Structures are given as C-alpha cells and as structure tokens.
Length: 88
Image (cartoon, rainbow, N blue to C red; front, side, top):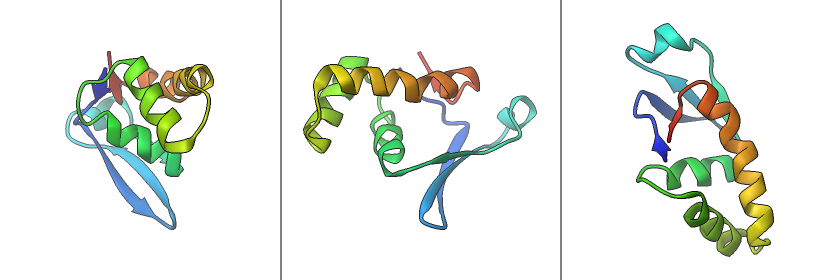
C-alpha cells in the first residue's frame, strides 16, 4: 500500500492536515488531521509498504509491541482507505 499523491500534508497549528488536490477534490472536499504518529505513518507511505513493514517501523520508533502496532495501523488506515488517501 502507499499514499495517494492526490493528497498533500501541511503543518497547521502543531498538527498535520491532509487535504485533497486536483481531481480528488471532486471526491473528497474535507481535510484529515494527523497527530505526530499519523504523520510518521503517512511519511512511511511515501513508498510502497506492507502492513508488517509499517508495524516494524512503528514498533521500533515508538518502542511498542509489534502486534499492537499492526492493530493500531489498521485502525489508522481504515478511514484513509475510505477516502482513497491510501491505495492498496
């Protein structure tokens, strides 16, 4: 999976906002707010990654359990998939 290049991330008031650009604005006209962990995961998706690759990176960076990382990442990805910000 990887991020859709029709979304851009910008810093806003200490958080990060994903906003659609181009043709994607016709499908999704809102914005998504990310915290620091969300930004970390979004940055990972600049290149194609598997769930396991993302979970390992998150577990290593945040010193958390690998299996819990997978569950947390799936929860993070679900709404992003629904708006096509993440492509499988």
